Amino acid sequence: MRPVNHDRYDDAYIRTILSQVRTIAIVGASANAARPSYFVMKYLSERGYRVFPVNPGQAGKTVAGLTFVATLADVPEPIDMVDVFRAPEHVPAVVDEVLKLNPLPKVLWTQLGVRNDEAAARAEEAGLQVVMNRCPKIEYGRLSGEIGWTGVNSRTISSRKPLRLGEGVQRLSIAPRGPKIS
Image (cartoon, rainbow, N blue to C red; front, side, top):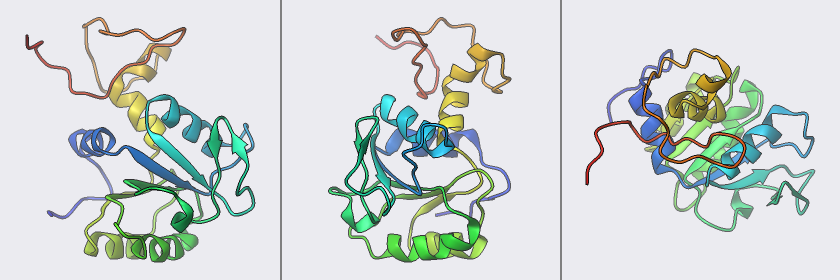
């Protein structure tokens, strides 16, 4: 695996991760609908990902159709990506927990404002891809063009009409736009 510049990620790197993962454990998820982690878990679930909120204080509760578990080890199926909503000083302990899983997740992702280079290096040494200081909800919206509908410059421009429309709100895909193949 080639070294990743954690100061700037290529769109292809982010798109590949978001296209390949299917199960996401969100460490530090909140049952409070006003918290960013709540929006992220709900949004990713609505985009077809299997989302497992991880928060020991909420274990067993169901919010937005998702059931909280206490630890990563309690997730009932293999995890593709661990999304961390914890302060940077807590990331090493999360990586310790991640590295005990069998099979290992493919990706360690830390949210906006969360960066711990030493923990990231340990995860990368174990074979995980790492994204830090980014939000998968924002990246999905940017790469799919969804946030462009609200007037935000997503650096992803297309004059093509979306192939599928959702109910009420555009539900666009992160799949690269290219020529239609019959």
